[in-house]
Length: 240
Ligand code: SF4
Image (tube, rainbow, N blue to C red; front, side):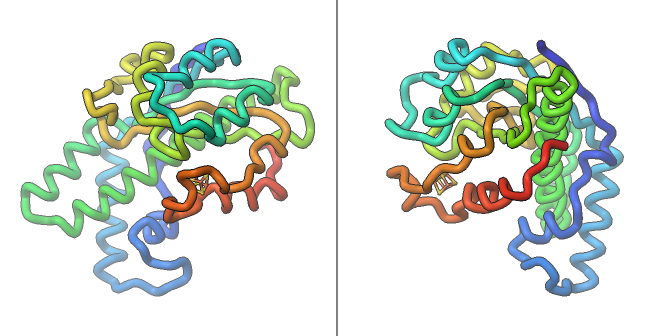
């Protein structure tokens, strides 16, 4: 299975709270009217300039072992290495909100409106994550339709550059998935072009396999401990 999926910009547009959180404003805190204006303006620019899309390809455990090995630079122990062999299904994915949004962000900075540029940057980053979530749901639905998603399963995604999976892992991921098909290429630095893109592996399996202790060597240097929130959410997780 290899699919290219397109979304309407409205589907990918992020929620206000998520964008403000990304800007360091806690949920529920009132914000100045000017900040609200910048958010509204940014969403409007996003809707007019974004072209969210994704590419998704199922991959066997044997194939993924080679992709995951990458350039041999991963940490010795990582969550993905500990999880994927227990998975029922795996898929590689890449998504983007498109090049025009990134050009609009650059234009804000070059035209002397950094406040709008920062807000649009947050909107686009959140939208890229939301597009990844939409692709994850697409995969989840496909598994459900084909009766490959037993009860008590969870479908979650993991990306190179995080939690011990070295960013250079992008090279083999790109070789397998060919995200160039949706206009996403890889820079020498392994960052993606357009920048507002996300890639990784979606892992479907029993909920327990996603429930790991944050005791890897690199966890002591992790500021957001983002895995904890995802693991807490597993209890309430229901396949969409
Ligand atoms: S604590 Fe941070 S680095 Fe460690 S697994 Fe969780 S998210 Fe990854």
